[in-house]
Length: 559
Image (cartoon, rainbow, N blue to C red; front, side, top):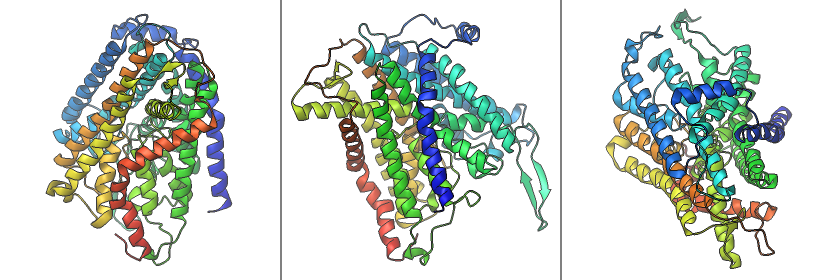
């Protein structure tokens, strides 16, 4: 690594720390109703959707509104793909999308996964990209924020069962946070050369005399929200490795930084809303340590020569315009943050770097994680950690003055087990059936990793791909689609149950026996619980894939 690589990584991490309280404080004021400069627009939206913005909802009403909204969004996007060839804004003359792929894509964008089994520039029209995908990029991110706000209210509520209003949380998240930041980032990206037009693809002749199609489209606006909303779906097939999506070093840094910006800032928002900024910083510290640790392992692995490549560094699949360090930093950020966008091919990472990318997702996307989803996923582990700590010291576990009881622990365990089961069971199905095995490009442990990565990415709502796997088949489109639903709503529903259960509990004053949850000791314990749960659940699978591949690479064998 060069000195400039170290400086950029330090700048990236430093800006993340600086921006966390700035944006986090602003979001806290928005969600507490203190920032309402767009109130006429906000009220107009409530009237359009027929929502009563003053009505409070219990967890059942909140969950029902959330699920119905997302189901309607799925139906609309699914239907739009089936008829896109007959609709306007289709200068390339693209046809309708076949049903299995349409199901997978609609599920992917509604669940904030943005897994893509297709090449955007030759599959989806401009209308589908804008009215379908971009809209879901906003509202799926807004849904994640809404869920964590409901959980916060449940944790700090002093009486009753109300956890807020889904429609208010969704509108405010979109109107005051996601939309303004996306407009700013879109303008910056256009200034760097990212395309934003409605032109038809341009056919050009290369220097060698061959013809090549240069895609066009309203890319900048979708790229902005795909990064800020931890969506990740590329307007073009190769995502942010495409020079039309990511043309300069500055655009690369902006897009990469946008991945973690809101998830990190939400930890400070959490601290403000629960009345203790130290609680927010404790969670941020746990996320930050896990992220830096994983990034360090990935960098060390990628900058170590391997006998399998004749003593050379693994350069295949890297984004050489910006350097190896940027490729690895992006890979660490996108898998830690449930984003899924890529600037390099993860299948070409060294086996250990690929294992860390997998582990980032397998841990539940809690290392910053998706917008909102990362924080409520981390709070699930906080509840488990508090419960374990209570057992260790022989007293009733409490968090923020409220007792953690069997109901909350059962829901927390369910939220962890459902995505994990989807990953392992579907991977097992993929490696024992012809439909699963015939899509591989590589054999051996790397081929196993391709299948494991696909289902991990789907169930973790990440969306990045290990490449090398032909996922555009009925088998993978269906199973990965199901994994996405399980990974999204199999976590959201238990979280809302916890929010409703905690909302009705009384807050007890702290005593001499209260275990502090904002101390360095708690941060260490929280990290240990996260790693132990991840290691126990997924170590056997990782051993069959990237770990054994790394051992074989040290003996000169590559796959």
